[in-house]
Amino acid sequence: MIAGLYERFTLDPLRAALLAAARRADMPITFLTGRDAASLAWFTAKQHARIAADARQLGLCGLNETAPWAPGLLGPA
Image (cartoon, rainbow, N blue to C red; front, side):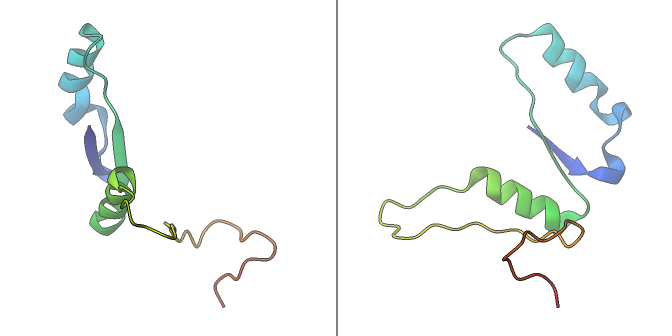
């Protein structure tokens, strides 16, 4: 897994890992990116969350204020 901020997610720092993965079928690469450290931490947490055996309800929500709100959902005031 390669994680980083959008602004630093360029080919130069990733080149060696991408070339190594291209040469090995047993080395898959996944990427997690975020606009800042807080959003990157949130995306990482969502990828690795596990459901507890005794959970009765489940919910994992994120907020994207740039996306349009679906009809019937409360959006930003």
